[in-house]
Image 1 (cartoon, rainbow, N blue to C red):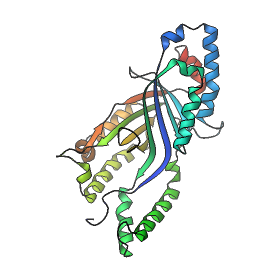
Image 2: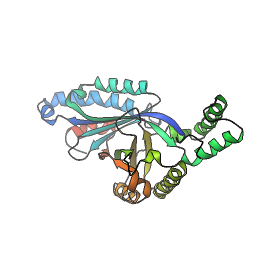
Image 3: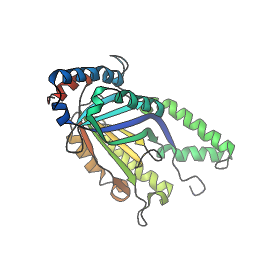
Image 4: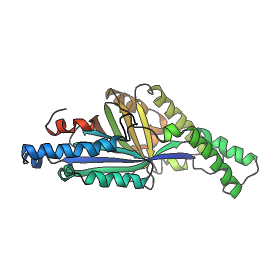
Length: 276
């Protein structure tokens, strides 16, 4: 594909915010029991409203008790826009509980479906009609193809948060070193490697839900990977196996990993008393 754009097409969906907090346990224990009870109660209802719009509605936010020294709580939010995410941040910041929280990290991204498998066919179809790359006719053809794809992929582009017991999140980049620059690899080679990479994930599809979010231009890494499962060992097995495929072994860089245990909003008062 020497004359075609080197950039694979993508579909974008939900705007996503990951929030990571450390809880000030010392200040919390310094409060009178009656005050702690009041603060906890006042936090539950707003958090339940953030979780989902009704009892039968899909989860759009979720809380996790974070494991390890990196923090204490993880909140994730899926919304239709960055403006909606900002409203979520502001609403949560108004709760008295927020006074006991110190942000340790955050991640802003959008749900992304990479179309390596179909990009080449889309480009070839546009070229077969005599359209020059980036011409108005070419752009209209690509936009029409993406619109059809977005409609077909809507459930994946705007997913509900799985009601799984465990969460694993990590950011990642593709390398840009002299000896391993992903962005200079020919399109067909990248397509082949991504296909092989995706086949590993598919083998684990019945055990883990994976949501890939794009963050180029939005945060410090290029992608975020959020995994949901009822058995946390699956995270280890999946990621370990993926390390052996070419795209990860040669062209991947990984950030810190964060793991959490699902904490329904109504269980927050128990968590605040050291119970889960």
